[in-house]
Length: 291
Image 1: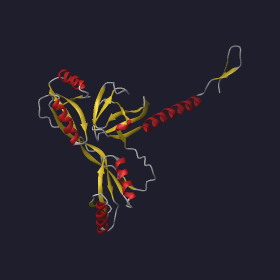
Image 2: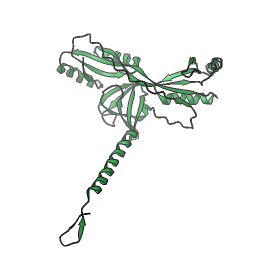
Image 3: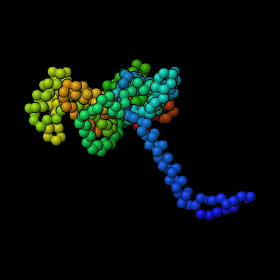
Image 4: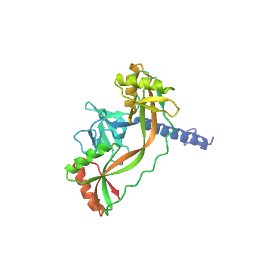
């Protein structure tokens, strides 16, 4: 350890390279912990409302920067309580729309938080490789278009298309694919097809219509429902348990259609920008895309 004398006092120690390395390691560890904490705060969720405005600030009187539809997948950062409402920062999955804020009660978190111990079989096979998005066919001469939204459910895309048409726009829908997890709920798994058929009949009587399918392991299962929302699947499994069934949830990642709602065909970016501002004035958050 090197020493140097201060004027009018005793020696003081200068940190050696070894001490500097220790300090650097500690700082890197703190930075990593901070990033991990931020990642844990983010969750996947689905939109519960038929139409959900996204605000620029945690205030319902602030500017609307996007409009989401029921069933849309989003990523949320929980949550700040202001004036009696809890707000979440939200980012749409499958699109490049501007982030903003919604009331947390309007989205359903996909993180499992059962109110009682859950004894379910939940299978999660190895995800399949993500399918490459198919480029939309270019049938028009325009170089630019405006993407108003990118939606999983076709009915939501059609609803948005109708809404835009009423406002005087001429929207079109292009379809591509994204890799999204679906959750299938079964009323159990049986080695015997006959036993599975008997259980399917009981399920129908109890208000859970099911179809019989053969599972990958050679067993048979009455399939009741599939959903993108894991919480919805778990709630259904709880209801089945209360009727003395042994439910099973199988999660699988599959290529899923994504519907892009586009407006216009513009020869230059300046023309597209004019219409973009008009759409913003109607509460949308469009993006300029190159065709």
